[in-house]
Picture 1: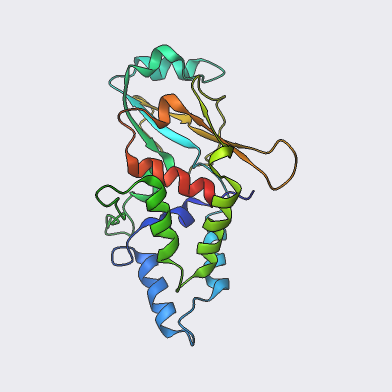
Picture 2: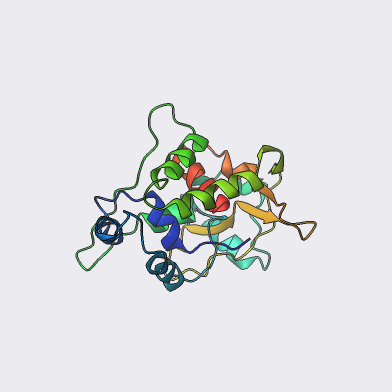
Amino acid sequence: MNKPSHFLIAFTIISFSSSLFASDFMSRVKNSNKGMMNYSWFQDKVRAGDWSSGGGNAIVCFKNDTIPKLIQADPTHWLKDEYISKIKSVEAFDLYQAKLPRGIDSIKPDIISLAKNETPYDYVLKIKNRFQNTLPYISSIIQNGQEKLSEENIIIEPNGLLPIDDTQAVGQIDKERCVLATMAVQVNWTNSDEYQLHLDERLFNHPTHSELSKAILLLHEYI
């Protein structure tokens, strides 16, 4: 399964009214003959960000640099169980990337939030419906991902996941107090179109991991 660039994830969750590339998107939809986007333009934008992953990773931060130093010194970069209680925050890497300021004027993007009582699954549905008329290509990608990663194919791992460097990140995080940790991994056991999504329960259900971040993680894995 191809993994999307951070541009594509940001594209789907940033309000059209606040994003530079989203404004460009709306103008192209408006000027097109059938109100549909030029697919080649969109694909070029995505390729510019490279088809790299990273949505399976989380930025995990601690109150001080003690535990990050231990993790960074460990060749396996394993997030041990005894470290979990020391966690200050957990955030999906894609959400972190999407919130970064854009343009030379450092415009802060307006991320589409979860409505009251909205679940992560509801949020994904909202994003899918958002593009149903203007860019059905994205809607179909999300739909296909949901079908491939149905509930029975989502496995909760209580003891964590083997660390995987899955970001190819351009920017930097606070490496003194934070680490990149694997929160989700897709596995294909049969070399078919059927995948399993394994989630690190310690991170995914951590009290500091927001429902929005959970939704962004699921959206990435579906795409």
